[in-house]
Length: 155
View 1 (cartoon, rainbow, N blue to C red):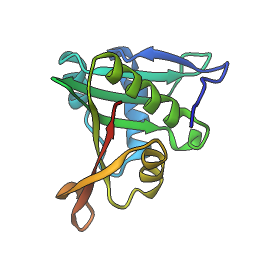
View 2 (view 1 turned 135 degrees about the vertical axis):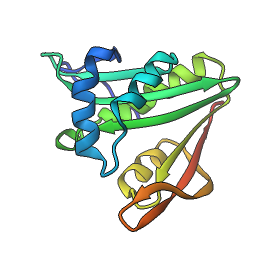
View 3 (view 1 turned 90 degrees about the vertical axis):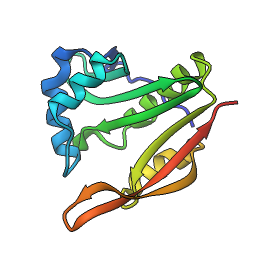
View 4 (view 1 turned 180 degrees about the horizontal axis):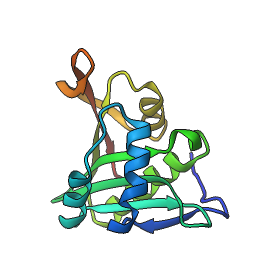
């Protein structure tokens, strides 16, 4: 499954100047969003951050990934809910896998809420396999929610 950037989309490295729009999407996409401080810390640490923007440089989606040794870890991938199911998530995921491959990573890991069926379908459609479960990993209305640990072996 391959996705192409639409002519009106641009893929750019995430900058601090993107954070106000990234935070808006984060709050629309998640009931328990990351704080601005978390995003700033990721950028400061040199994590691979990318945004998909429209022709007016308006952020539509973003992704952050850390890489260490031979592992890559997708930390956050989010498409504005109004723009979902148009290929941006697929495009970002493929881009991150390509970056991991170029860095000689052997696996891409991520956690996903057990209840996030759309995201699970996306990841599994791209070859991610279920590796385990992290009990109580995410905050939830009624306490904590489990996360599935998924992995993609880079061949």
